[in-house]
Image (cartoon, rainbow, N blue to C red; front, side, top):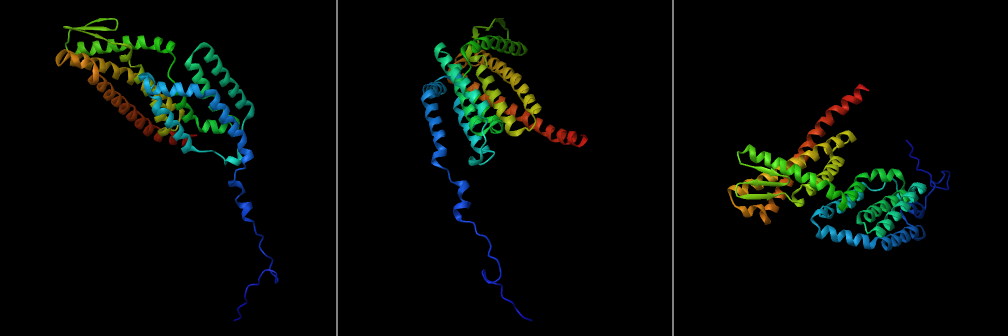
Length: 313
């Protein structure tokens, strides 16, 4: 047996084409000139919206009705980071017409809100410009892929005062009615006058803070977040939102009932202060537990129904 050594390049065997290292790493290097438009956009964005962002962060920290933004805004950034870009940065394809339209609309919202001293409009313009930048640079597919972070940003904006006033009063009446009905069920003499519950020796006034609007807003946002993370079909996510609204209202009615029960049978001081606040937080955790259980149940049903529908089709 004769062993033949392989021919060296240049001695009858063609040499393999070699790729320089610079070529293989070209896709991972960013040209500073290509980053210049992003830097200019960032500077313009900060110059335009810095006062809006500063006021929004202050309201998150100081206003109870806006405190959920401290959770939702970081969650939105984290979700966008986890989802990442659909295509590499150097291969992006933006949608210039739609993105430019959103940018113009966002800037108009910013200035119209400033003229009317309306914070919600300015903050809505802030989020609109963020979406416009995403569409302008990376296209509609990327914006759709980031729908959940974008939704969290919108939910982090406190509702305008006009809407709060329109919703809070009906919720106060509903909480008063549910609380009075539960007290009557427990054989407590009750007389209801609007949002004032009269029990022996005490008057319970269901204020705007006790209307359940805060828990309703936060629970709807958590419903969108939970549905986006756990559920796959839009119908399932809408069903979860449909569950979140009555859960928030019912649990707030239970809170009014517990307050009246504790005030009447234990100590009138339990109707306010730290214990009253702690009761609200505890019942909100109960609300989220119910919502999470509903999401789990809908997810199980989704896991059985969707494969059956696909198989039938």
